[in-house]
Image (cartoon, rainbow, N blue to C red; front, side, top):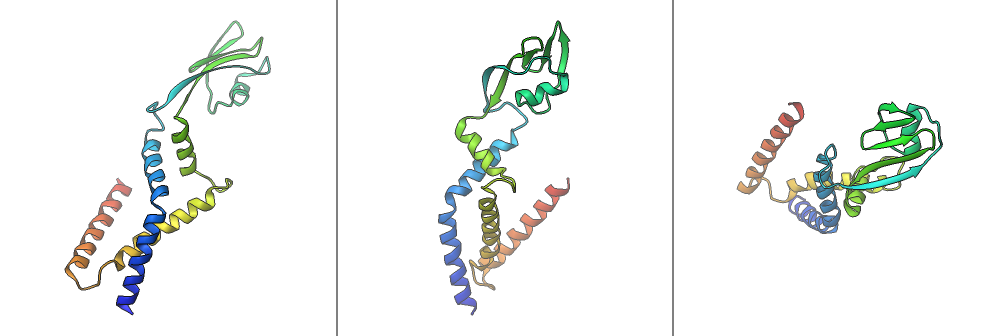
Length: 169
């Protein structure tokens, strides 16, 4: 049973590895990009001029312009000033700068962050389960008792210790 199971796991590991190579690349690239989401790295500025309803209160400007957590800094002569833009409460005209990732990178990061209400969440669950399979099947890549298996166990233990350290610092 041991050798047959080991051979089957190696085969499945290899086939899933090739099958999921593209999505693993997407998750790797988007994961790196998401690290910098609190900066303007890789983002380009897009100037937006928009007319919305006039005479909005401070707290209504953000939702009307689709800007999350908009904070009005000051108001002068009916013009609200906020980070990277203005809103004229008399005319409803708004002008602001929006910073966005390049199209393909934006698509990748949205794919990476899919929530349960989005259609892609099933694919994210499948990918997560597949990664767990890679973790488990890696232990069947080499026969127990061999030197390479023992070294693999030592490296796995060291990786687990490092992971725990990083989680709790």
